[in-house]
Image 1 (cartoon, one colour):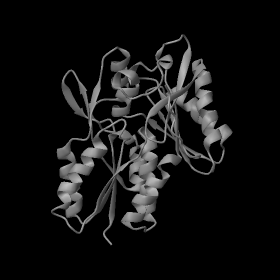
Image 2 (image 1 turned 90 degrees about the vertical axis):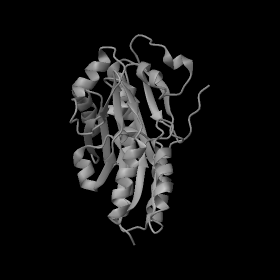
Image 3 (image 1 turned 180 degrees about the horizontal axis):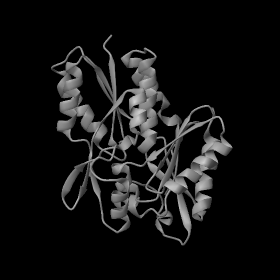
Image 4 (image 1 turned 120 degrees about the vertical axis):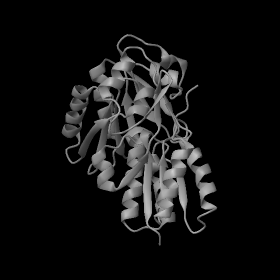
Length: 295
């Protein structure tokens, strides 16, 4: 049996420590500002989180690209030459075209590697929710499961990832086309903060509004606690350059879920460019996520 390479992309927002712990690689997308493309590094080599989020706070638009096809070709070929089969955990296909590009490149490459296997898996999530799915795949690989078993069990687990996010408003997500929902959610009512989930088909959907920033932070903690079925797990918290508030969320989680291990990190360049500054998100394993349609 060939060894398995688990790889994700810049949307996964996995910290370097988590990537190293679980032996996960990632493929870089790009941010684009003033026509200049910059690799979207999760280790922030090219600009700092504050640089990115201050740019957005100042009203500047930062756009993004998916993983370029040549990047897939280069790294997939390298890993195939090294003897690996590849499980690529992609950002939700509702948010990025990378999962489809990965499939197309894989089909072409496998013509020259008939004994190898590549799976391009739609995580149905983004940010550290996608990261949670990649970690799941890596754990299954490390348990010695076959390629087919890793893919099947990873796909079966995707709707167990619970995402609860709060933002100051939906302007950035709306501009980037990364959120669905009724027009009522798009108004900027004074002091009202939306709560966003990722539903079972990978859409980002605002499900409720909460009055006040602190109340919105408390609400995503409560929603997480309600969704969790096993408290003994890693809960990932991601923030868009609002560390003090994110640390408050971590403390609230520790008080409500003392058996959980809370891991804090940044919302990376790609998701950050879409969601805007000061977002805070919690990702955990729990109850099945359902489809959430809004008129």
